[in-house]
Image (cartoon, rainbow, N blue to C red; front, side, top):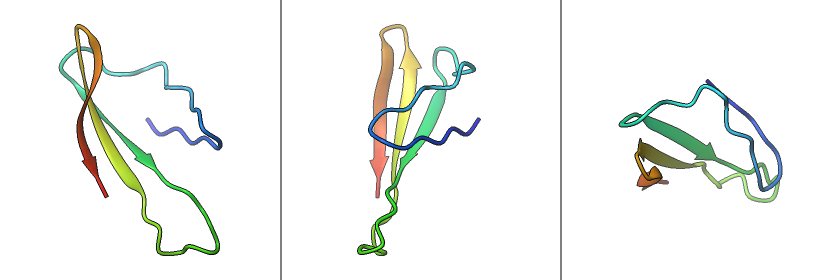
Length: 58
């Protein structure tokens, strides 16, 4: 499932995975003065305590 948002908050899709599954979030900005800026990819794993960050890649 793909979701797009503008601003500083986004609503998560209703169909998020259950325990022991992973999701990836790509964060990017469109700034005409900075075309070199690239997205940051953040990976999360869900466990009994909630979502845990397991990786960040630029």
